[in-house]
Amino acid sequence: MATSAFLHWRKRWLPSPPLAVMVFCFWLLLNDTVTVGHAAMGLVLALLIPPFAARLDREFARIGSLRKVPKMLAILLLDIVYSNVTVAMQVLGPERRITPGFIWLPLDIRNIHGIAALTSIITLTPGTVSSALSDDRRYLLVHVLHLEDADAVIRQIKNRYEKPLMEIFP
Image 1 (cartoon, rainbow, N blue to C red):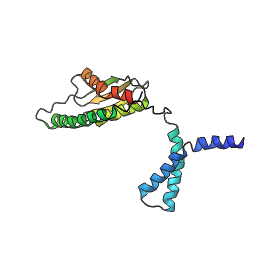
Image 2 (cartoon, rainbow, N blue to C red):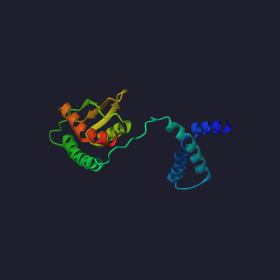
Image 3 (cartoon, one colour):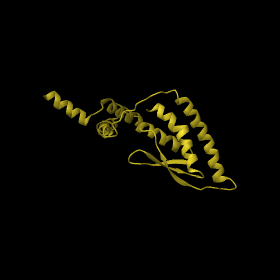
Image 4 (spheres, rainbow, N blue to C red):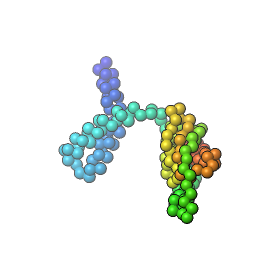
């Protein structure tokens, strides 16, 4: 019975010992010195952070096929370069044509880690920013710097990013 109570206490107050050790070590690395004060603060952080992290979404990252990752990263890199040039021309060019707008992107991807990757990709690409995720995780609000055709933007995001992410995060 005492063992069960101890395990319950440990699970509640220290749900992930590896995370606690990692927090402690990173704290010391960030401070670039080991003193009693830094070690004490690292210990406090190592005891406080894991219980909060345990309360986050408990869905584990399911990884599917990684075959699409290199191609998607290459496309993303090219899109970032192209978008930088496009945004620079829109902002600094002679016409300075900008018509910002918001679109609700319907999501087919259901894996929260895939959604997080998609929101990061959208935000990394200049000219677009992920603004909000609906409570039911079915729509993503995206701000577009220059919005001419909302359907075209939706198709581009779904085909270039969401479809490969659905294979990576089934």
